[in-house]
Structures are given as structure tokens and as C-alpha cells.
Length: 166
Image 1 (cartoon, rainbow, N blue to C red):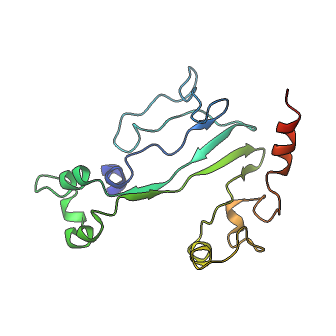
Image 2 (tube, rainbow, N blue to C red; image 1 turned 180 degrees about the vertical axis):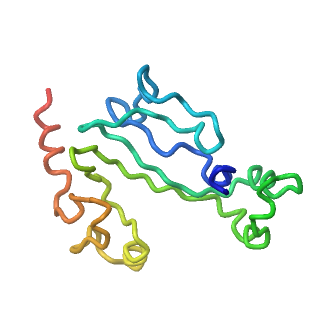
């Protein structure tokens, strides 16, 4: 019911990712022959509806924001969300701002390769914040498909290729 109501758009009003190509925020997210751009809250900011193909690179950017104007609208007496939001709990976070995690993934024949090698799990973040060395020697979450995470020189091939460019 809350998904259909688009409650998530109150806390995640941004798009979920964008194509990576010649530009960091590459264009081409909406093309003829692909799904149309959606207009519903929580979907209208998506930067692509393309059917992904092997070799394409895209970001995945889930986030959670506490934007005062959106929160005030969602908790007003006329809002359909007001009965679902604990205003007292929300009060604790209203000045927090928010957080967004961005992964860069390449689409492969059988899934994806995740090129992002920064800490993602609670355990990893706490370890690094406590002074632990990064990258780690063990992947705490292999399902994220961070194949370069345990590589001592994850950019080796990319940096070497750049050196040969004219």
C-alpha cells in the first residue's frame, strides 16, 4: 500500500542512477524503443528507463534524505502519509540531511561487476572509522560483486591503459 502511495519519494526524491560513458552523467537515458519516462513521485527523477545490455556502465544510488519541505508536506494533517509516519522519531532526523551510496556497475552477461571499492557494510564502515586499513583482506559482502575489492592495486589496468593514450 505504501509503495503504491509513493511514500518512498518523501525520503528518496532523487533518481536511482545514471549511465556512465564519455561524461560522468552520460546522456541517453530515454530513447525511442525503450520504456517511457515515468511521471509518478519517486520515479519521475529516474535518469534512465533503458533496457540494460552487456557492457553498459551505470550507477546505482540509493539514498535517504530528510528534506524539511518534503517532511512538512508528508506530515501535514491533509497528507495521506501522516498516519504512517512517527513524527516524534522523524523529529530526531529532520536536521540530519541525508546520505546516498553510489556504486558504479558494469552490466555483464550473468549480472554485473561492481567497481566501487569503498566501505559499504556497517562492519566495514565502523572498521575504517576506527582506524582500520582499507581495502580489506576479506570481502564482508561478496554479494555486492566488488571483484576488485581485494586487489592490492585495483586501478592497475586502468592507469596503465591511460599511460598509453596519446
